[in-house]
Image 1 (tube, rainbow, N blue to C red):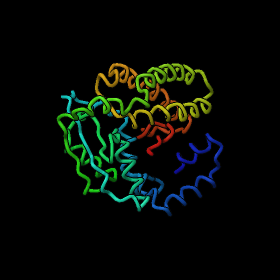
Image 2: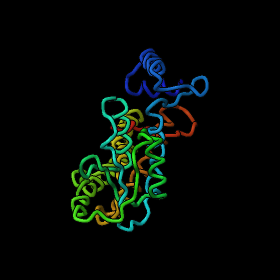
Image 3: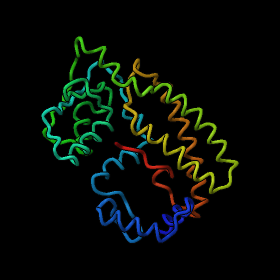
Image 4: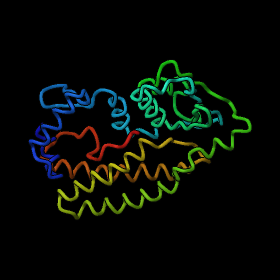
Length: 251
């Protein structure tokens, strides 16, 4: 708890406001306590939080793509319950699915474990068990349309921008006053982690995998510097389980 209070103080949030905010989160079931003074994300966001915590291993999910696709059919699932619909949308977004048409969500079949692992991951994240998850060997005349579903993300350009930003920020962290650097790490690192967690991990030629790998290498260097800096600011030798960064948006 004291570590959390010290971290909040870096952003000029006093101890009382921190305790009140934590109490409200607990009363809503959004965090729980494993032991006195130790807290973790709970409720609907717990699975998404685990996805965030595993960001360093994101690229280990990627395997060679044979050209097949994974599909999830959601057209028959109800949307009247906004909480359920929001949980479903978050789940499909986190695994990189996009709507081809009429509630048929697809992505390239290039993630380790194939359809079965993706189905299990979707269920863990909040997709209803009744949603069909299946593999498609080809999309016929829709193939070209499918390949452009992620164009708006401009992923290759995003990788280039983040590499440049993180490289400069890593240098800046090492010459800034500690608390100023900690705030920069939280903001810049948080955006980068969000980009990784929400990355659909597409195969070539939809993206340039070497650029994505370079982005990952760059943020790992940044994260190592940020962790060391935050450990000094927080005056703790505890191993930080998660990067001291802004929690990524998950829809």
